[in-house]
Length: 114
Image (tube, rainbow, N blue to C red; front, side, top):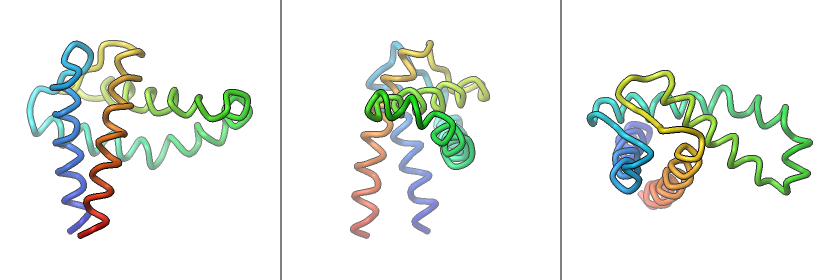
């Protein structure tokens, strides 16, 4: 039940990102947000660990800041796979992923208390 609630709240967070940063991120509908949240979650579960492992040297040199680039790439690649979710370039993906991650932390904090 918590997984479905997290998915719904993540879709809402994606809509909030599109509202807050409307010049960089657009989401066509709540259905598109649901699909985008699912794809972002799958990319973060399957592709992100491989990228983190392969980029350990550059992550160490940048003191972990390269992880923001990896998050932005996951966010941007999800928009490339979907038609109802669009990100206007890498910098928009970086800002959008930061907002989405911050909202994700809030969601995790709320769900932890339930």
